[in-house]
Each structure stands twice: as structure tokens, then as C-alpha cells.
Image 1 (cartoon, one colour):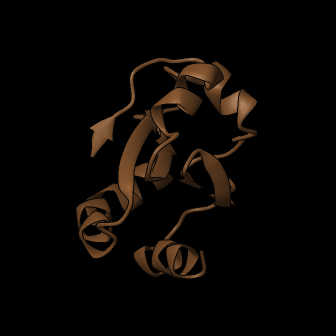
Image 2 (cartoon, rainbow, N blue to C red):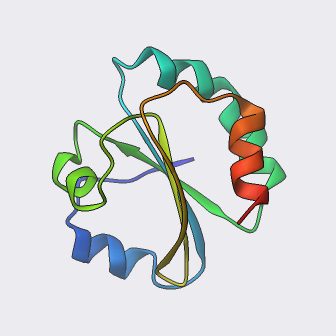
Image 3 (cartoon, rainbow, N blue to C red):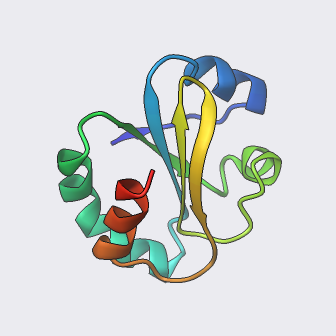
Length: 105
């Protein structure tokens, strides 16, 4: 999974304007993020139509605020730069919950 560098909302919009993207917001100190991280390579492999981007919430605080990501781990899906779904809350997420979210898009 590609790690997204620190960027503004406008830079992000330019970066994701073509294609399907799944933003995965997390932080190194977050135990619920650490819980889902081992499943992420498998989830990525199951959904090759999405490019997964890891967003460090602490490095990209302004971006998280601009996208209303108040809890982590969280996922936001985009298609051609337009948000098509979000699984954003502070709760621990299982592999099945993330897959169900993506399947429902």
C-alpha cells in the first residue's frame, strides 16, 4: 500500500482525480489500526480495481479534518475524484466489516 505524503485537500483531489482509490486513515499509536493492518494486504488483493493509499492521520491532520475523519481506523472510497463511500468511526474494524463496506459500494 502506498503511503500518502503530507498534502492538502486540493493536492489530494488532484492525486485521485483518475481511477478508484481507497484511503486508509490510521496512526502508529492506534491499537485498532494495528488490529486491521495485518489484513490489509489481503483486502488489497481482493479489490484490485482500487488503489489503496495509507494516510497517517498524525502527518495529515489537516487533510483528516477537511475530510471529517474524526476517528481511526477509517476508510474513504473515491471514484474519479468523487467520494462514493465512507467507513469512518473510531471503532475497531474486522476484515469482514471492511470487505462488506467495499462490497456495498
